[in-house]
Image 1 (cartoon, rainbow, N blue to C red):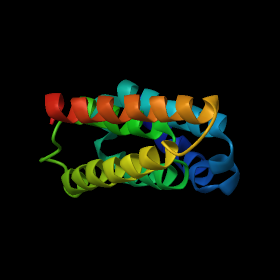
Image 2 (cartoon, rainbow, N blue to C red):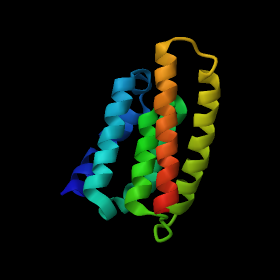
Image 3 (cartoon, rainbow, N blue to C red):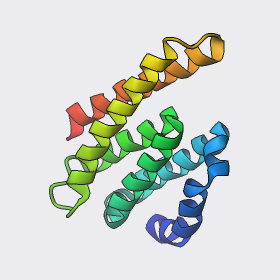
Image 4 (spheres, one colour):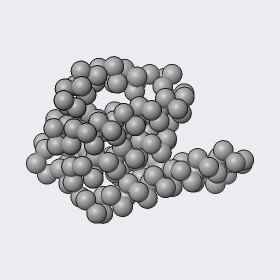
Length: 142
């Protein structure tokens, strides 16, 4: 049932993910990423066909926002699917996402070092946590 629900909701989720209004509100980004993450955990292997599209969507969100929850989704995908050799296009998407997300996150963290205030430090700490958790999942599951 989870995959049918995900397939039915996918056009709406994609629309929200591509919206500038979504990217402007951290709570909306976090909620959308939580939906993606819970969908992966519920559907497991049944979500395999949606995985390349999901990775692309999450990477678009991360490029626009550098929100830590996007890295959590990428890490969950690795935990659920492993290395993805059997899913055409997904293995390349997974590797590309790891490399690009790591690069974007490290650049954002370098920029955050110059930021002042509690919010900047808190966001950098959360981004660091998500980056290391995603990398750990790649080491363990892929």
